[in-house]
Length: 373
Image (cartoon, rainbow, N blue to C red; front, side, top):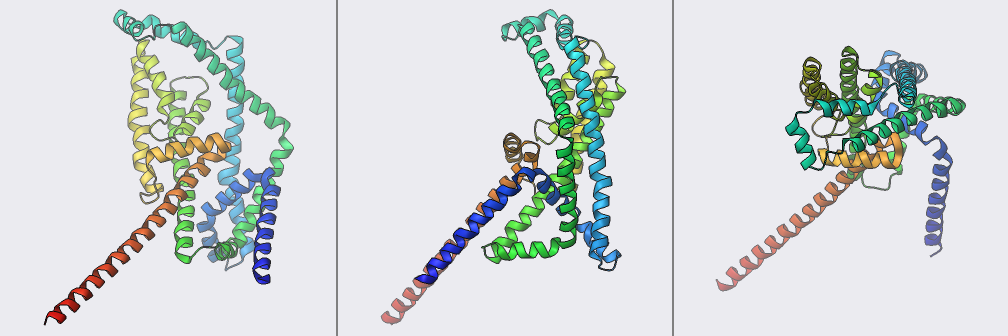
């Protein structure tokens, strides 16, 4: 009895100190989260560097951290700075009236043939003035959000560099001691070897598939879309390219939410060359990029159904912000994997019971035949 009390008291203490430790780390959740993500992504490179440097873990971890800085940190920082600058300029132009979103809607209305205008009236979409006001208001709010983010980043520069330093510091030690730490975590998880193997493999596969595959595909589509906008002389092409890259993370919707309305605007206003270029790039190049790159980078075995990815990504973004595009699909993938294991175990148990029942029937049938003989 006393040993049971000690056991439950220790488990209660274990849960309490674990919750307190997690609460302690919450202010730097994003830094720790992305440090772990980068460590998982670059761990294969760490193994190669270990072989290259003869097993010297410190040198290999330092080189891998520097590679992450030059490949990931610096480009993302430069793009984010340029994005914030373009968003601020767009906000100033919209607020001063230099960029009139409603004017574009009015041009579309004037270019429509009479039957199209009548069709919009019958469909209840004829009040384009209200639509013009909503689009102008939405553009103003979006650019204002980016501008406010720029001000917030400027005011919290110290906190940003502290989080960045924590992430890089943690990343170095995860590279150096990640294998040992992973082994200890697997030992501490209170599950059988079969469950741990399946769930951890799914966890790592989804992390790598979501970040490596989806981000590369989104970056490719955003780059193509942004360069096309720049070539056509569309203002704030970097801003639109980043938005298209972000929307490319959502299956079925994607970057067409940006390039399609622009292509339709060009077509309605008589700019058929620009419209044709945008439709060709959007449908053929951007559309097929997903079909060619995603199976290579992600793989068919780790891909969730598109509707699950869409719902889990939107839910993750709503709950966790920018981190949610990884956390949402990860939770969904672990949910599916856990229920697959449960159903597989139930099926195995059911099959075993059926086999046992068949054996008992065969024994009874054999006993009956021997009795008759």
